[in-house]
Image: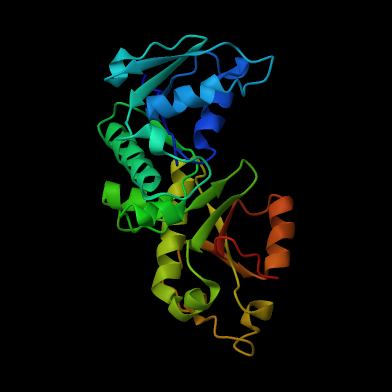
Length: 269
């Protein structure tokens, strides 16, 4: 059974390479079925800095051309090289177009591996969105980029824990623009995506709560129009419209497994 995970390096001038080396040096991940997609020379530079904890395992990089060439064993980090044209010109901690372009190429390659069935999942180290744009790739973030690469038309970002799954109606957008562009169709799309996702992870009869944007969830139109849920044709789904504080209490009591939240990065109380 294929359980291989492709890990993208993220921005080579950022924290991603360091996180990867430190994580894969831990005893708990020794021999884990992980293939790193990134610049080998950048990873070697990080290793030369001796940043790993004293208790970490000594590791070496194994450069592979294909996933089937990987050797999963303690002390081995398998890397599919996505080279920088001039790694020595890369300045750590500085936003650069070349770094954004490499981060994009790593994600594109890892996605191709997933779509071909060579890996089971993708884990992404952080990228810098400004660098991504400077590199000529105008995506707000990982979510939109992965949707484009996979040809997905209906998608959403999910934050997943055993107790609660939070799915955002929007992701990387300013608060003002979000309020101007929010519409019922998007809300219904995210609810459908949430329902489908919950069933795929084993929840046969999902219960979905939708957080209100306006004070008191609109108070029946007094503080904003919340018709999007009331007029929804998703009557067969188990939905509940709540005020955010009530949602958190329900979530802690495990009365709801999924929350459709207004947008990423904002807590609306």
